Length: 462
Image (tube, rainbow, N blue to C red; front, side, top):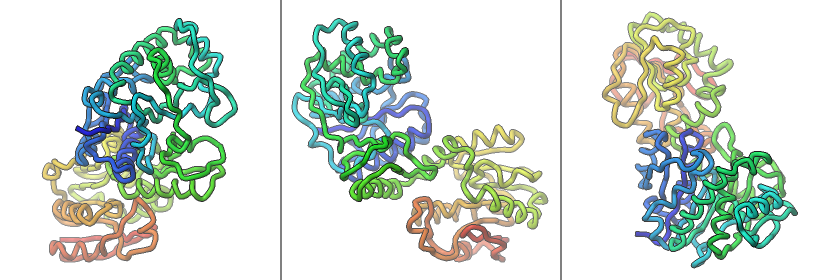
């Protein structure tokens, strides 16, 4: 048993998988937290591939039932966990947080800690009306919201981080559920002002007021709102970035800020880079930004170039084609292929590919089904090797694609190390692809047949 536990809730969308993965790794790398101290609570629709990745690094996963409306109130279900309730302190975190320092010192015995809301959500007159209707004779203390001059209740906390002593968790869970259900029955109070998404936050305020809990308001650095257009200063301990994520999965901040805050953004992105996970990232990318497909290599002039290259090698004459890293199928779209099999690590890429080309066969590649992928006369593997983050994964992929080749392999990769390979979190150079293929001793002929962007396209024939 640990004194401190860290907990989040993940719902069934790859954006939450990606966020949770970044949160988990930031806790481990920056907050001196062991993976076994982290509980990843998930609804039953969350996909196995994500849970497998989380378990690999030692986190605990717990399936929870959706609570209340099943949409805005699922956070409450975390506190049903008896292990959490028997601990010294529980840190409940939203997935869209990056932790940059230890946060266990925010624990204060018999006190619930959190940062006041960024903005008056909802306005204080609405809060007072809710408390009146709930039957309270008094209001919580009034204070200013964090990022404006408006007022709110001092226990109207931003839900990004709640610090809860274990001895208060069971009662808080009961009261929190009670008031969430009450708010759902009286949802028109919030719907008329468009604040129904704050049910769990407001019910938390109602619950702690009924409990007469001691509330400690944490400073902004423990829950810093990246998404708001305010002057940002200092080095936060936690970035709450909401949806300030670029299309390549990095955190960005466009508003005015000082060097310390810039340093925090850079450090957060370094965590993302160091913990980059291809399965989780590409599932996020294909689902969240489908227009980007597999990246610059499968769009525009690069795509046209590949089409011409595949025409030159007469891909349509091949008796069978295995496409490893098939992505969104743009590369093979204009061709009539024989016995085509597409393979990818992203379930979203595979699902979309099946819709686009139901006549083809597709396989979702997992850690356990490499042997199930059949060999083919021609193997395509374009822009896969360059995304392997470590040498072991690179060599494993080389052995896989070579082992599945019956006659010829068309593969892209790097022949030289370049400066941007060290600064782009999505790319890695491990060795000259020509040398990699020669070292397998399988091919009688290896040649570069083209290039685009900074990759070489290689034909290897048996």
